[in-house]
Image (cartoon, rainbow, N blue to C red; front, side, top):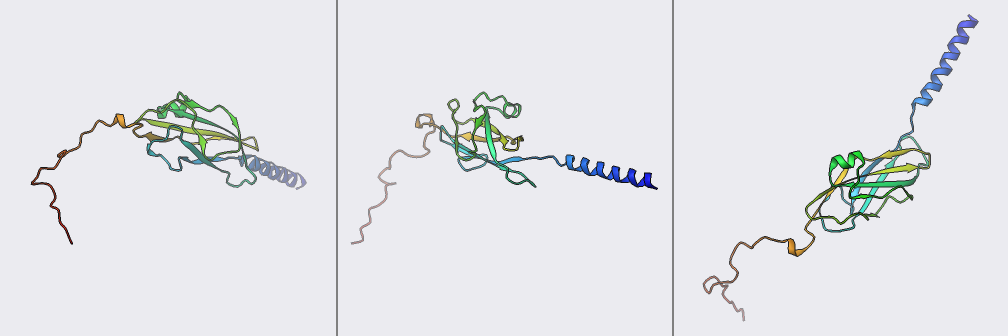
Length: 165
């Protein structure tokens, strides 16, 4: 009987320790924004501001200590970490709001894909899902459309002058 009780108590302690180890500390990086919007289309800013939020379900006192931003011209490039447009490198900062893009010049009508990796004060790191933005026309010279309609009024199409005096 003593042997069974000792065996059962040691097994229960083992399972409790195992369950404590199974609760992995995790953080989530989400709500990626460009100029305050998610998946923005028609951005004219050449140096947009990037923002994100971290969440740590079930953990308290989690603070960001560093980040790294990856910007690519393709979604696959961003997923694989190939940041041919901009790789900020690991930046030791707790800032996650309005981080200025400092990469290559952004071309009109192109999609840009980005993600961010963050490190915390607990030694954890996490990478966000990929987000994107699309650039708008960057100059009036790119406007190649013609107006549909007359350039001037003919006398019969001109509005009549009405005086209300």
